[in-house]
Amino acid sequence: MDGIDEELAFLLRSDNRIEVLSALDDAAPLDRYELEGRLGASRRTITRIVGTLSERGYLRERDSGYALSAFGIAIARAYNGYRETAGLADRYRLLLRHLDADRLALDPELLRGAELIVATESSPYAILDRMLQLRAEATRVRELAPTVGAKSLGQLAERVEAEEGFEFEAVLPAPALDDAASHPEYAEAQRTIQASGAVDLYISSASFSFVLGVMDGTAVVGVQVDDRPYALVESTRPEFREWVDSRLDEYRAGATPITEC
Image (tube, rainbow, N blue to C red; front, side, top):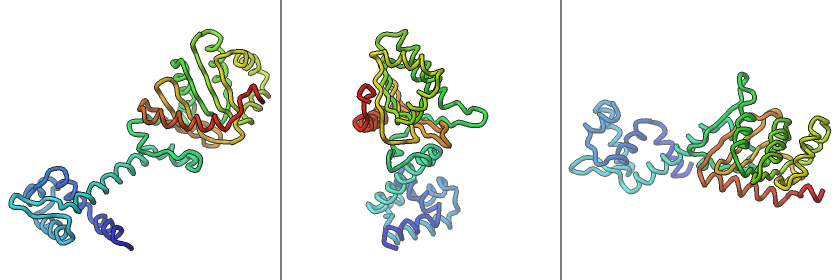
């Protein structure tokens, strides 16, 4: 175990040690009585903790109380930063645990403030319903999806037939289009879509189980489980939208326009 691992192990053996560091990083200097009040700990406990932290170089004692050393500040802020990132990962665990990190390495920091929607037994179509809603309200849609659904095709056909100024771009795996072509009930919608100059379709040789989408100012990332939509995050943060847009650019660059197939 190297030095930093030893320090982390030392801090993690006691929640009070972390709380003292955080309290002093937030409002130093603090004396023993103020630390007792903030932590709700006994004087004996505080005395023991500040003594141990001082010995290891985390604290400096002043006339007005205790303050963090430069070392203490660095460790406290690094630890709190780790906790924030880990907290984000945990909050969006149901999406991230099913996301193919080799193909789509999503930094949890990009998910700050994002809304998470998860399909349940009582709402099995929550993801599809939200995607349809976002598409219905957007004038420009970019998407990468592993499958083609009847509702999606129908909505798209209605919009390109009825509206001017609507643009749609999609990257799909070849099996998804083959599957759609095998359903006679999809034929009319497909003819309408293919005849429209508002729709650009690209065929990817890669397979994927995630969804990427940009609908005007909103971006989404979703995952499938057992070939069904399972979890979706959506956000209007520019950083997240730019990240999704760049991933869409990458997949589109490696795909073939349907007119060339």
